[in-house]
Image (tube, rainbow, N blue to C red):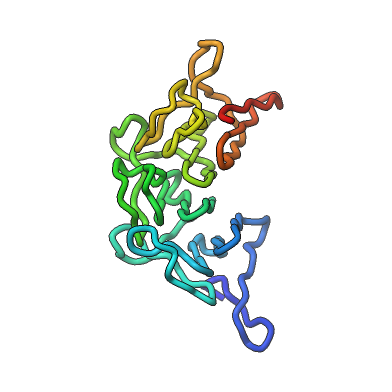
Length: 212
């Protein structure tokens, strides 16, 4: 169907993956997020509410509202879930995040939990993020790859897991720096944040990790 939902067992809708090729699905122990054929973002489960409290239970998939509650998120190309926040890449590389934000993991220059998506700010807080090809989330930090490969992280920086050479919490995307002083990572092809560390694959296949 247009929404990407089809009739499933006992008439309960199930998600239909896009054709051709797969589109992302992201899950954790409490909720999931998927992209539909038309690029919509849908979620289900116990989800972040006002202030990030995990109090809303959505037993079936439902569309995620747009920024400011206007319309719905569209043109999605990637989704990710953390412990209590979610993000999606939309609109040709913009990033939208919502949920818990006590460590700035939503990237909107605040520590306020958001029940609806907000736009992630650009590097250093200038403007808004564009050109992102992938977003990936840890428990309280977030990372994104801006095409063609510049790696940014933001949120909790416990144990230095943002990779900027400090342990300072960052409320907006911050470039990941090479340990040898060689500048920022600009050739990342994938990134995987964990609870206390982060790893990335660089062009050529080398794996780099930082944190604890």
